[in-house]
Image (cartoon, rainbow, N blue to C red; front, side, top):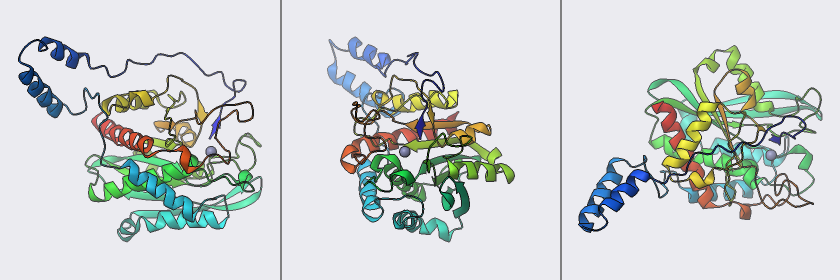
Amino acid sequence: MNRFSLEERPVILSVARSAKSNDPEGAGVHSAFRSFLPRVRVLLLSLLALLTPTAHAQKPTTSPVSGQTVYSLTQQLLSVAPKRYNGSPGHAAAENFIVDHFKPEAAKGNFEKDEFTANTPAGPQTLRNYIVRFPGKRDGVIVLASHYETNYPLRNIHFVGANDGACTTALLIAIGQYLRTHPPTGYSVWLVFDDGEEAVQDWNYTAYTDHTYGTRHLAAKWYADGILRKIKAFIVADMIGDKNLDILQEQGSTPWLRELLRKAAANTGHSAAISKDQGSEDDDHIPFLQRGVPSLDVIDMNYGPHTFDMPDGYHHTADDTIDKISAQSLQTSADILLELVRLINAR
Ligand code: ZN
């Protein structure tokens, strides 16, 4: 992913953030009963909470996908595939890690390897996307995507991308494990583990094509075979394991999906995880946006302290390690993504 510089695109910052989930209705009920019948009040509030589990959430609503499980999967992926740059043994190990977790889907014909050759500044590279399908009941598909590789230009430093690539790969695997036992009742949900998101040399290299190799390939392929028309929403998860979770309201993303992101965070009690900043990012959603698919980049670019030496914090440095992410943030991200899927279905 690449942050637009201000020279490239004037982005930033009109903060029009909606109010946090203060639950004025709940507060009204609270004050009305404050001075008498406290037990009745508690009972009524409990019933209200039961009847409307998400509409006025104040406490986080924990989804069935465990943040601790996602964290453990991240640890496992990093132990077998710490460096995952294109063509490396770790890249192959990461692919095997993904394949190994979806054997039941492969047995049903719902697991696809999409291999292609990318023409990069370092020459042709063989890259692979993996697509896992969980069929639903309605005609249409919601895609959740994450890249899994690490940066080719960082191959000579110890860059493991715990937040950048690893934890969102783990997040999608855990969501897949949930969908295996709880198949979608609305639109189908497809998981896309995409390759070659990172630039091989420079994001802005030659005609601006040294990046998003996997998603550009997939968007073109799905356009050619007609699948693209079925995609109701293409949602990218990127760098959302950060201990200090601060999810950008990414301005390039489709407006109604941005609105649903805020709503999903409010409904699950995680409004504080949505940043006030409204910047733009280049990421894996762009190739789908360009082909008219509603797309959303769920990304936290405010990663670690920003210093003179590290203007982008831990982003694309050897400091992007497992200790910088947390099970709690991964829980928040899982909660928000699953609620987002529910809200897209309810739209
Ligand atoms: Zn990156």
